[in-house]
Structures are given as C-alpha cells and as structure tokens.
Length: 232
Image 1 (cartoon, rainbow, N blue to C red):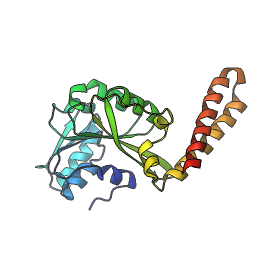
Image 2 (image 1 turned 90 degrees about the vertical axis):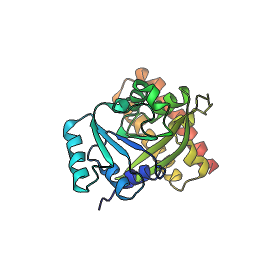
Image 3 (image 1 turned 60 degrees about the vertical axis):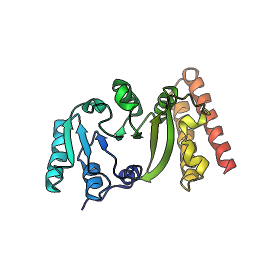
Image 4 (image 1 turned 90 degrees about the horizontal axis):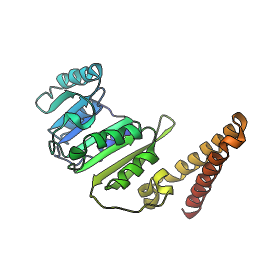
C-alpha cells in the first residue's frame, strides 16, 4: 500500500475520477501507482527526464502489477505527450520558472488539457504571472504545511481570457485567502516574519545604497500581508 505525503495527497485530491492523467517528473512513480490502485484513473503516463528516476517508477509499476494502466516514458516536460492524449497533467516539485518553460515549450499540449496541477518549489509569483498573462485561469489553489514548509498548489486551465489580478495575489494564493482556509492566517504570518528577517539580513550584509529599492519592495509586501491579515 502506498502512503502519500500530505503534499502529494493534496495534489491527488485535484484529480477528477476516470480522467487520463500524466505525472511529469514522476521520480519514484508514487502518484501514478496510487491513483491507479485507488481506482481514480486507469490511464496514467508516468514520465521523467532522468532514466534512473524513471526506472524506480517502472519497478513500482511492476510491483503493483499496473503495467496495463501506467505507461512509463522518459523525456523532458510535456514533450512526452501528444495533443489531447491526457486530460490532466501534474507538474510538481520543480521551480516556477522551469514549470513556465515546460508549458511554453509544449504550448499546444498545455492549452488542450482540462487542467494543469502545478506545485512550484520557488518562483510562485513568476509562475502565476506567466499563467495569468498567457490566458490561463487559476481555478483553484491550496496551501499545505508539511516538513516545516508551506507548499502552494496551483490548478490552472487555459481559457484564453485576460483576467485582472491584484499584485498581492500573484505572491499570495488568492483562492485560499478568499475562501478563508484555516491555514491562511499562519501562512501570512510566516510570510511576514520571513520577509522581516530578509530585510534585517539585507541591512547587515549589504551596501544599503545597493539594496534600498529591494528593502522598500519587501516592506510594501509586508504591509500588504498585514492588511490581508487585518481583513480576516
């Protein structure tokens, strides 16, 4: 029996039953085998750019006798897919800039998906900006706290619409905030404290003339987070 982490379990929670799924950068193949074992999907493409990582997925697929339902493919990003071959693609555990590049490099595949389930490790703001500025609508988001870290999961779908978004909500997940998810309070407090420490470190270790604009930018972000907290 496969037990998923809280982060991966939340990602799986966004998968609609009986849809064809691709797990891009699958690593050990936990997610593909879990969703097949749980009868969420009976068609999954499990891919990784690393041959060694994909071999782990191949072995796990054999262990659970899921070879008839999971296709393991080696290759970069969404390039392992053909247009409309799957309904949902998961791209998790990578940087937001890399995720943006993966979508850009396989544009025709990405825009024909029912949804993209994305979990960036860094550059979440830049990923949201890329999505919104390129016709993708963010249809859901969740924040997960695990291993003393906050993970942000973004679900997007191409609509071709230009949707305006307040600047703060490129950096802070808007949907969990509007929904008043229980985690949002501690998440915002954490972002405030982290950025206060960032300002302290900048003041100690850098020439203030060189980082003055950066400090002002961070101070604006802190104040915006405080305003959001006050509105909860």
